[in-house]
Length: 411
Image 1: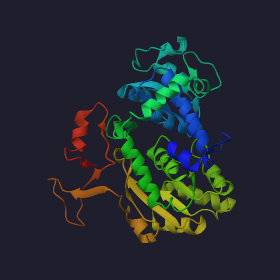
Image 2 (image 1 turned 90 degrees about the vertical axis):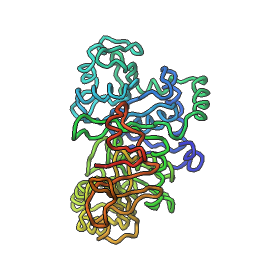
Image 3 (image 1 turned 180 degrees about the horizontal axis):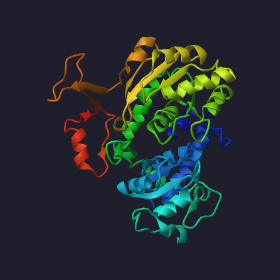
Image 4 (image 1 turned 120 degrees about the vertical axis):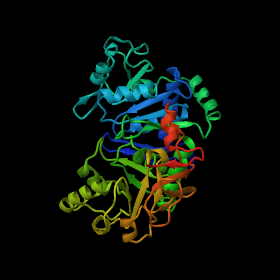
């Protein structure tokens, strides 16, 4: 963020269309510093966990950078989580502070928090204590209302003082590149979600590697993010990559809305669009009826599922995205490990996951741990700067997938 301020200060960093917010890199950097100082003023200390539970907003973006500046470990919490899932994640990694939306669709977050921690409804902000959430002490909500036990985000942004800004400057010289910077939970399809601990080094370098191979160093891009920020697709490949290359991130809506996305592709002169293959099918269907001007589009970044050749051809012809980039990754690898090139032919992009990323080793092994012959199935293993540090407070599960040689077994 600091480097982006110096190199691209007057360039738009983030546009949140549904909020009517536009911020340059210089404005975002200043406000991230103020919020980071405010976190320190609330008593948060380096290495403690701060949760972010919400939709795609400028506040989410700001919290991501402010947490890093304050030496805090950002914990991404899915906005769709219900009470039991929220309680588990907050306790699993001992979240000390929580930044959250007021609601998600029909779900009232304050009511859910009171359901998990009944003490909240009678609490005074700054003095919250709960038997069910023993680690959580501070809740900051993006709201204009006054709720018991809750700090308002807009008030917190003004809470930092000059002493805290000086402390922030001192912290910037102490935080190490290989310290934890982020915890992202696995899907939990085979049991309770596990907190994957990712380092600053892994996140920052993965974001740079993806952006460089995507051609973002060649010109200034405007990237639309219909994908959720709580997922690495949004907060690593989106916001972090954009800061590296001075690209603008555009949030078309708080949650996924294909109509709003397609309209924004035209109105905001978007050059690069992120999404899953299913999302791009939606964009094509909307475009076929709206017929928006897509002449500025050049790049599509697809992931999370196989991309059929027919879809690649349709996106190329109807959405004018000539550079379609297919990627593969996991939460544990910060996330991207395979990535196609902009000049790969359609059949390569439709039938493969691209090539290993720079400075990343990959291999396929059999049941005995030996490397298989080319063309034979086996388990994919990955090693490199992008590998996670382990599952939070879960050494047994970590040892199952992260070997002493630092190879990560994807399963």
